[in-house]
Image 1 (cartoon, protein in one colour):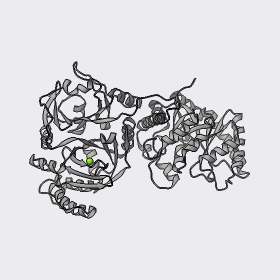
Image 2 (cartoon, protein in one colour):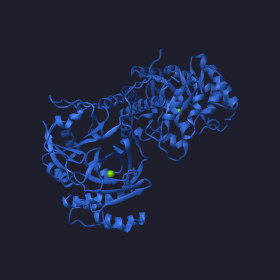
Image 3 (spheres, rainbow, N blue to C red):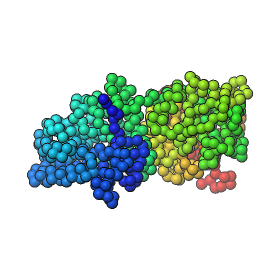
Image 4 (spheres, rainbow, N blue to C red):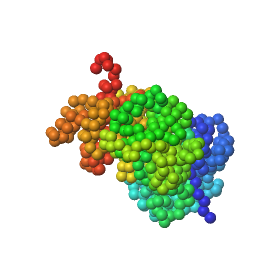
Length: 633
Ligand code: MG
Ligand code: MG
C-alpha cells in the first residue's frame, strides 16, 4: 500500500508572521512545514503551543533546521556540540517533530576526515535514537570539508546508524554543477528528506546566491527536474520540500508564494513522471502540458465612448468588422487568421476590466489540441476557474483567471468549441479580408510589477508546452525593465512578460496609469513588412516615426546592404538580426494609457523580440505622445 508523497515548505520561504504563514501554507495544499527556530523565537508562545498551532492548521512539522557546525570538531568543542544537540532535541520533542537537519560544518576548527565525521554522526545518532528522533546530514555547497552530496553520503554510509540519514538539496548539488545522477547510487531509504529550490543562472558567491536568489522549481535555470529524476530513481518516498530564500518572496503576499510553491511541486513531479515513465510516482496525475495551436481571439474591453478610437485603429491596421456576437455587444474584426473582439458590454468580465484598466485586452483565447484536458491540467495546478452563466444555445468556453484579472480561455477543434464562430457569432463576410497583410498574432506583451513575473512565468510554462528564454533587460530612459519571453509549439504561442519596478519607466507608468498588470501591446505577423508598411500608410494608420538617428545607428550596428537600409528608412521599419535570421518591426503610437500595436516579420530562425530596438521605440513613443507646442527637450 503506497500513499501520495507529502509536500512541505520551509516557513522561511514566505513572508508574514508565523500565523499568516501557516494559514497560507495550509490553504495552498501543503502537508507540512520545515520549521526554523527564528520563526517562532519572536512569537509569544511556547514551543509546545507552536507545535499545537501548526497541527491545528492540519500541518505536520516534518523537519527542524538548521543544526550547524557539528561534525569534525576537536574536544571540548565536540562534547559541547553534542550537548547543544540535546537541547535542540528537547525543543523538537516539544514542537512535535522527529527529524533534524544538520548542515555540513563551516567551523574554522572543523578538522575534516570522513571517518571522524562518521564517528560524530554515530554518536549523534545514538543520542537521537534514544528519543526516537532522527538526524539528516546535508552538504552545504560552501561547507568547509563536506560540500558535495557524495561526501555527505559517504559520512552517512560509514556512520551506519538507523537514526542517521542523508538530506539532499537541489540547490547545493546543482549550484556546484555536480551531476545529479550520482544520487541514483544511494539507497532511497537512506535519504531522509529532499529539499528543492531553483535559481536563476547568475555567477556570484554561492552563499549569497543561495540566501537571496533561490526560487521555485521551474522559475529558475537549474535542472531541478534532472535532480528529482535521480532522487526518484532511488525509491525515495519521503516528503518533497521547498526551501526558498528569496528577498522578493519575503515581500510578496504569503498566499501567492505558497500557491506558486505548491504548483511548482506538482508541475515538477509531472515532468519527472513524463521523463521517467518506468518509475511509479505517487503524485496526482494530470493531462500533459497543452500544446498551443494558435491565438484564437483577443478581446478588447472598451466603452461606447472609446470604441470609435479603437475601431479606427483596427480599421487602419486593415481589419474589417465581419460580424457580431449573437447576444452581446461584441463586434468581430478579422484579417488573415486573426480574430479580434471589441466588447462594449456594461456587465460581465469585460466591463469589469474596462472599469479597472480603461480600454484593454480583457480576454485571450488559445486554441489547443484539447481544451477540456488543458482546463483539467490548469485546475490540477491550482489555477482559478472563472464560472460563467452562458445563455442557452451559446458555447461555454472554459476560462481561467489570468494576468491582472484578465480572462484566459481555451478552445479546440475536437469539441463543439470548434463551432465557436458559427454558434456564438453572426458572421456576415464570407472570407477574412487580406487587409494590410497581417496573418496571425505573433506575440502578446504583458506588463506587470516585477514581483509577479516569476509567478506568471511558472503559470504559463507549467500549463503550456512552452519554454522560457533567458531574461533580458530592456533599457528604458528612466530605468530597467526586465523582459521574460515564453514561447512554445514552434512559435504558435508567444508571450513576453515585462516586469517593472521604477514608476518612472514607460512600462512602470503604464502599470500605475492602467491600474495593474495588463496587455501593453499585441504584435501581429506579416509575411511582407514593406508591403504592409505601404498599405498602412495608405489606410492612414498612425505609424510611429522612429526618427533618423535610429537608422544611422542601425547602419553602424549591422553593416547593412545600402539598398535594404534605404528601404527600412523609407518604410520607418526597425530591424534586428541574430544567428537565426532577421526580424523587422513597425509600431503604432500609444493609445489608452500607453497601449500600442506592433507589426513584425520574422525569419523562421529568429526567436527574439527586437529587444535592442526597445529604447528607440520608447523614446519615439514619448516624443509622439508629447502634446503639440510642448518644448522638445
Ligand atoms: Mg537545504
Ligand atoms: Mg513586442
